[in-house]
Length: 105
Image (cartoon, rainbow, N blue to C red; front, side):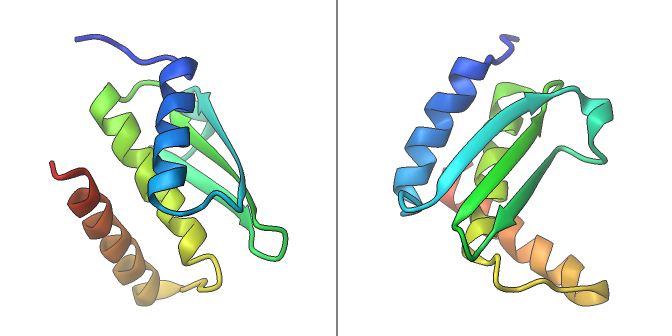
């Protein structure tokens, strides 16, 4: 199985930023060691400035990494909504469903 590189990540970012109509956002995507985060990816966003930093775990397969990037980008669209508790789990499940639907896999 082929790994993925920072170049792949930037290519995916450009593609999905356009597809998701997030061109007005300043987006940065970084590949990070898995131990630096608690999961597969994370999105730290600022809605008022329309900027986000997305971190993707480096040990994922290319398909998992691209899917995780899409999932994290979708958080930009819902950045005005910060659910907690049960609502957070439902929010994450909805974003995950949309990410799968967009990729068609």
